[in-house]
Image 1 (tube, rainbow, N blue to C red):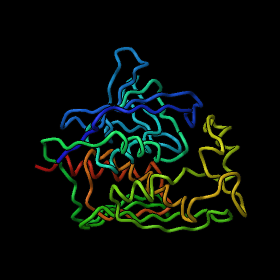
Image 2: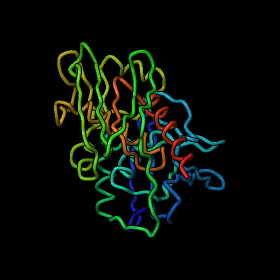
Image 3: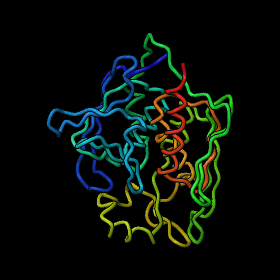
Image 4: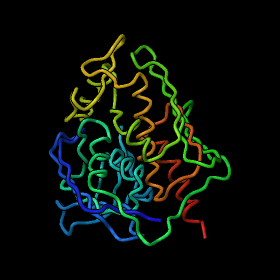
Length: 277
């Protein structure tokens, strides 16, 4: 069955790229609405469904856009909502970009757990992958294979840094999201930081909201787990696949991918969902 929140919750903090203060409130919603964003700071308070139909190209994060309405970096919130099974909700924002908080989805997961989840009297559609689907760019790829569960395997490779090469694989459940994936923080390398700032990005970034890898170690915070960077990539992928608009039954395998490839696969899966009777 579909699910929504038992009541509303509010979270606020600095945004990663714009460096602005943003407050968001997530509210319960009726069955079949889906996860919907609304911008309180824009005239008419426009609304936008969190689905691949509205994805717009951007750097280092996911962006939804329709006309003057845009929403940036929703992936951590969407990972928490989809991962814990919140199918219907309204997300009110007073900025275009969501707050980065501690760089993970853990604050959202804690808020959802404290608020509670309620079942709704409508069945839940699923996307069941019956044949392989693959999107790629050079040696980067994301593929979906038939499975009986939602499973994610992710490989990353950052040679010459403390990150190195990592592979991680999980059967994704609400309990696992909360315990093993949601706390995994966003990450970058020291060599990338100056370049990102020069492009007008990560203006609100700090060592409090990201892991920063150097050639031999870590600058500032240490990882919770040796494979925390690859866990965070799984978290990002779960958030981007939430844009399908329904749970997925498949084994998703990714290597050196990013939001661009995540969303391309999500779009193919959403087409499958829309073609189902």
